[in-house]
Image (cartoon, rainbow, N blue to C red; front, side, top):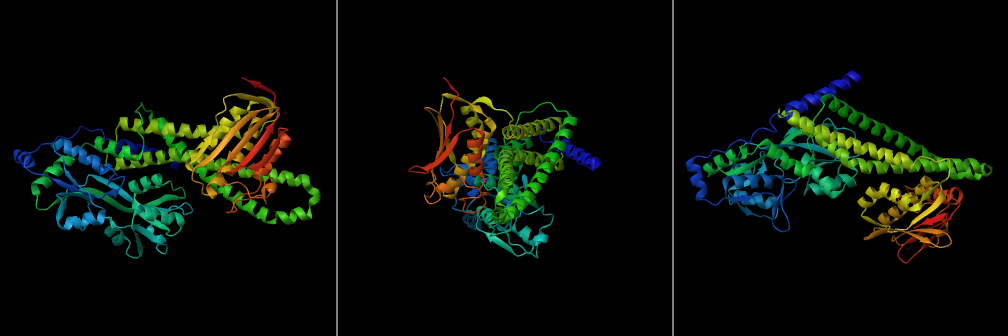
Length: 560
């Protein structure tokens, strides 16, 4: 097993070395003939594309042409010292209609587009992008789309590659969606099982739309080839455009793609041995995450079965109250473990996406034989930085949930700040504003980690209520007030708790969540931590906009 993994790591490095050879090559020169230069002086060149096809191209609200293709066009315009006259259409269908009348000299598109090919001739392909298979998270890796032929499989309308899809998979009945956004949301909701789209566009759209429960599950084996179609009646323009596109260097193309896919990282000196180790660690981390997920899934099933039978056990074994308390504490810990894994997953999403992009770029550059030492250095530093960020996330959560044996003096403000740092990604994702502005420090004696867990439970409960009630301007406010004691108030604007159940929120196994995903132990264990472990009091009430959770702590001293 180890030998096989080493072979895989070495193979990926060889891919990286060969793939970057031409990436940093010198920029090709553009040599136009006198006749071609004269042609450009006496002509106006019109251009059209897809007005809504990011990250490839689009026209924004101000009419500005943006995207990967637009930046290639901008370079061409600079090299030719002229500006194309842009024709803005309402949609891709209008652009295709325009092509039938040859009202544009140049139209961007997929080299496989049969409609454009009738009146236009494509220049040499300047960029390739694979078509990938998008599914929900519960699907495993898809090696062959034919294995899913009985599922609902969709792809976006208007893509030039649609002919290739139907030709390669003749036994599948496809569903055609209006846009890629409709297709991705259809997969998320379960309307479709699979959506097929280009890697760049699906990756960009998933990030822009904030969809979390779908993934790239495989490759179709089909590639979309980007080109520029030139009016067949203008052979000189065709030759000029073909020359000019070829004069754009690979590093310029790489920088354009990087701008629309992931952040640039500075280049550093590389140690090839370290690269093998980093790639190995990346695979091991993914493997560990998968194992942890499977274990969590099994634990969740066990807890569900236990909860289904727990009411009868309580009635039959009332005398075993102490054992039941221990059981509930154990379940609470498992629920906190689930919350912790969820928060880690949120903070790991971006570095994992970057690692995935690095791996895809290495393979792509290898296939093109465009790797050199500097590019491998580039990949190594990027990978190392992402892994360090992921390691720091694990350390932060491990320290936060570490049990304490002895009471210590600590500042409540620090506990609140540390807790907010952990939940910040989830609150940001849910568009929840957190307000905590206390500058005065309050010191008490107790267990800071357990108090932090209690605060975390209350914040998570408020977050769930805000999301479930679809509040527009979601807010969670935290306030510390000094009187005879120290009063910590956590309030939200989630419409409050119904008066007929507000007295039950701290009862074990009582949950207000409509989706029934709550264990009913979060607020119960919060009450246990506050009253028994910190010798303080907790209560709940409603304000005009939501709920107030009030913790009254015994004051040690105040440091101003």
